[in-house]
Length: 163
Image 1 (cartoon, rainbow, N blue to C red):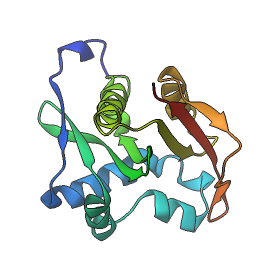
Image 2 (image 1 turned 180 degrees about the horizontal axis):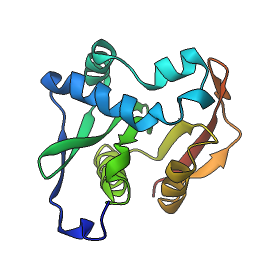
Image 3 (image 1 turned 120 degrees about the vertical axis):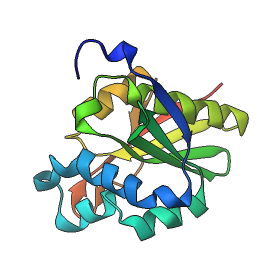
Image 4 (image 1 turned 135 degrees about the vertical axis):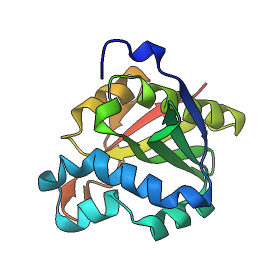
């Protein structure tokens, strides 16, 4: 993005079912450059189709990020007792650097606090270095907890304890 990204209008809101196709497209575009590092099945699981996104909408909140009215990012969560599992975090490559990921993570944290969660956790692949740096900036740390692979693609878990 250009250096004037601070002038872009950014907005985070809950997704609706009519956006399942757009969310699937963002997930695909965000991870496409890494496709060769995934197994075929791992990439398919990381880039769900519209029907799978619709299922996610029924399992927990899905947020979308809009920049100047265009859907450019997404994240979803699932409550697991007093913890919240973060999944499907993606930002279009052309909007990286515009702090869209930061806004999505802030939304997730706010929701976790509202729900009284004591812990946030997620799984990621070691080659998504930019995402890992974002998670670390938000206080996430690696844990030995599984899963350790996604259909043969290496994974590790990161968590953050909430106070």
